[in-house]
Length: 142
Image 1 (cartoon, one colour):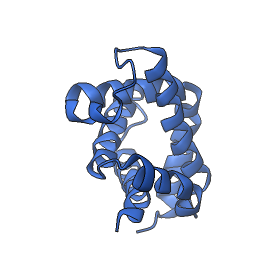
Image 2 (cartoon, helix red, strand yellow):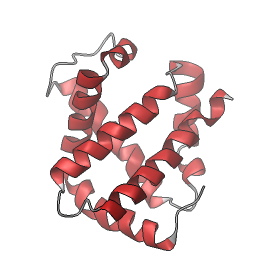
Image 3 (cartoon, helix red, strand yellow):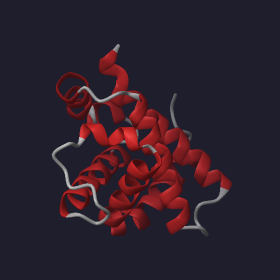
């Protein structure tokens, strides 16, 4: 699966706005993930998962930094996320379903924060892009 030129343009354009609030958006997406899918908390037994905690903000920042790396490497997402894929598959052993759940929470967060920009086309482009990211992060599991 690859992105069309139009989809890449939409992603890059929206990322310009998202990146200015990346820490907040990452934290909010994780808060949604843990509230909506409490089973995902099992991977963070050592974290303070209360909304707005320093650990949640730090991890939200890391998540969006990884998304940013993928955005900056739209032609080579697999290369940009290779180390992260190995970490999650071999060391952290995160259930691959969680990447799809987090992607959904990111989409909801983007829609809530950027309602005018989050058109049907933007939603489709970001959904496709985050599906690519999820696929890359789970390819080491196979």
